[in-house]
Length: 218
Length: 218
DNA sequence: GTCTATATATTGATAGAC
DNA sequence: GTCTATCAATATATAGAC
Image 1 (cartoon, rainbow over the protein chains, first blue to last red):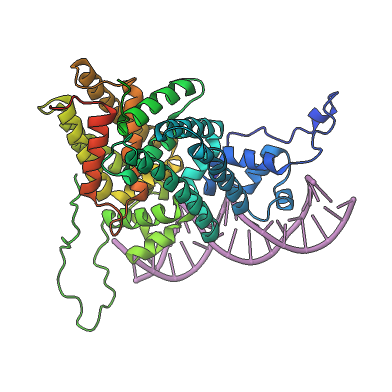
Image 2 (image 1 turned 90 degrees about the vertical axis):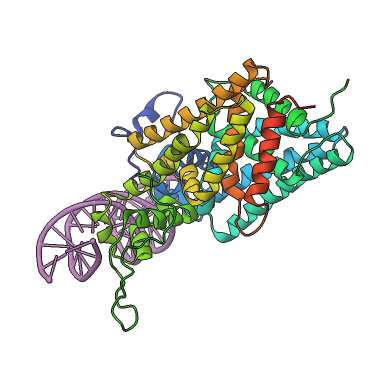
């Protein structure tokens, strides 16, 4: 089912003989496994990828993966948890910094998009294979996402209260904004199309200055 | 070709055998299979669902499914194709109707959201299990989606040309809008949260009157 | 059109040598 | 920490009876 176009992907043990690359398998770090797995999951879907695929990508056998992770689902959870928790730790503090709600939200949009692209592959997995998580793990991810969404809604509410924003419904505005931001991971391509700075600029303008109708300095 | 949205048109209302419901299996229509499969795929993910699960849901055995569909992937394709083609056939013509670009886009937004909710389960599958399709089927779906996106971008361009819209980048505006609209399927719930009319109203306002900065009648 | 029975392949995971 | 070997479960799909 997960037949990739291998046909010649035997673990190149002969490459180890080359000077400077003596048996390049000193130790596998968990992040290498997670990274390789994310690449596979994003492209083929979690359930279409076998442990042997992931193992081969990091140069070990399938069984050896279980020395690092208790199960396949734990790898998926590691991907989803990292990519969901990081925005809460890195972007949300920007909402507590100095400045008006519009300024703080603009800072969050920038950080959100930068993280989304920096961890684009993992984001695709988290947006796609969430329902292959166990019920407990799924609940943890959902909680993090809900909290993030609530904080975005709150800064909109604050902006409305201060007269800087004006929206029909802060909750729906937050959902529209977050769906629009996260959607970028689905079509962004590092080699073609608009660049990340262009996207940040246009999206910040469209969201902060237009969706939320920030008052113009005039 | 257009499958009736209702499901109360079972031809054989003929009373089954008197005692109880002995083997109610008059005939299975392909749409029943697709519908049941979509429900499973949306909730558990395509690759996590077995043909036996789908078969059981419609009251037959797994092997009998192959009388109606050549493979499991064909069922997925039927789901994705229907839900992707219908907006092109039902919503895009609204962009060719009379009215200003803002009016035509507003009509499309309404139709898009109504279709999204009416076929919410199938949309979730199409947004989630696309990369379990064969390469050819995937390409067909992608083409339809690209065309739809292009048409939305074109109406934005038209609005800019006529002075009704003003955006930093019509292409990015179209992507933002479509991601925001499609994202609704991810959190909408028929029993709680904002109703569809509320969503249509708020989203139309935020998108047409704000993101695109349609000129206000004042 | 649906059934039983089964072929064939692949999966996640384990045991134990080294 | 990685290996070989393998188990047990499950998958899609097929063959042929009825």
